[in-house]
Image 1 (cartoon, one colour):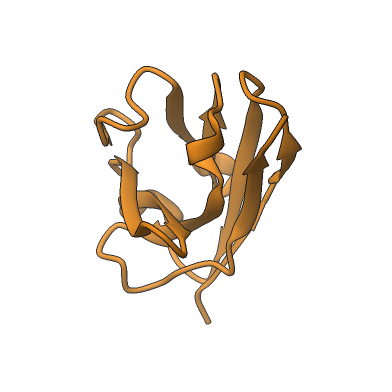
Image 2 (spheres, helix red, strand yellow):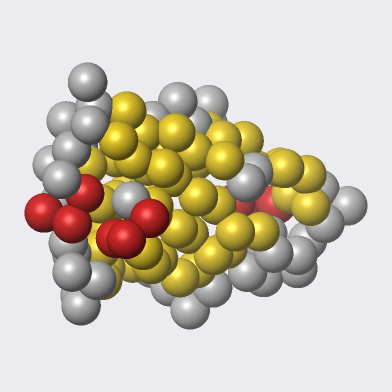
Length: 114
């Protein structure tokens, strides 16, 4: 019933930017905190950001703080992650998830390469 669908990934050069989106359905979206998590074979899972249901409070891991911005549009049932100043080490599959990490999307690939 609950479905989270990420989009917006792609291949970018170092220093570039993307806006990742996560379209949610099957839940009352505004009631849930939402998170972004990324995964690489070498580093495994990294919890990188979280936003409260109303959008008033956010959390960022130190590895992305100052470069990434999490936001949400509850009227559109959509979560966003603006990723700026990208580095090769940001290359990963990016997942959106319900804040308690019970529900996950399928992920979207971000590749940062010259």
